Image (tube, rainbow, N blue to C red):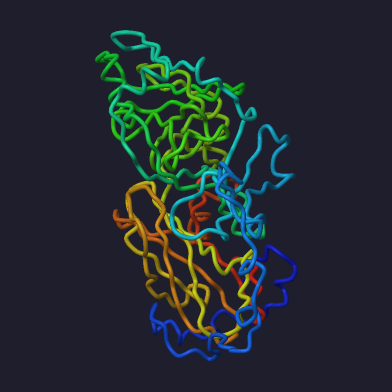
Length: 428
């Protein structure tokens, strides 16, 4: 049956078993279109002079810091007002449906705050390491600048991404269902180098990362992870971190839930056991149907979503040559492949991966086919290099029930009607 996220979709009566799947046999190859791309040689938009052909544009000093085109002003982060109690403890979602490639522009990166954005004077910024170390040490930014640095492309995903969808289709839009994520090239210092500099006691088993904002965000992290791939980052996509992303310095915990990527990081305490603070006990645990909860579920499992077409990005060109695209990621490694279905999971075809394919980073996929104008049920299914295959929502619920909020990596379904309008639905 279908579970609908919007009343409009109830008009869609066609059984998923009746969807035409012949076009899947063509894989991602382009074949003859039932409607050719427009080729009107009398189009005045190209045959007649336009203002930009005859008028001088702005000079090089008009915008010392560049901005997107005025015609792209709709491409912004958006929130859901009723989702959180207050803007200072809220979420702004990345517009995934407006993006392509794998890099998230700095101004569009998902943001989540627990006490608003901390505005920190870099001259007064200090980073301290204490606890089970040979020497309690305080660093300023000039001290950190002396360490060798690395550049790594990683995704950050909130554990609550898609969380509203546990009990059925809720939010109608790729941005709102899956937009608690971004993919950024981070520049910073391997945390292990700093920990080696201060010296670890033999009893060191955990670290506690603490933020400088008013919420005093803290998370316990095993020392093995800290000494593996964590980064103390101060740049994103080549420029300084944005204030909402933790300026001047944040922690990067690749592949693990975003709440652990402590922003405005001011302190790391080294200890011999986890601290069991608020964000790892009453929050960021996965509640089962029997009332028990699993904790320390750090890794983000393989997941994917079709970004176009989707509810905020309908098909507007009519039938014929059509491109399906989306993103996939895994906190355990690289995405090995992505399959796409146009009939709600009855038939699958392998999509084409394109662009950088780093570990614990977003992958972009494409699937080209000829749409005949009949309704579609679009799905994507990711598999990472550990062999893990993205599950259906019903498979997740059969194990964890419907009471959870976090770690929903179930397959997403978009229903596309004959007019190209897409809606959030579920198929079972």
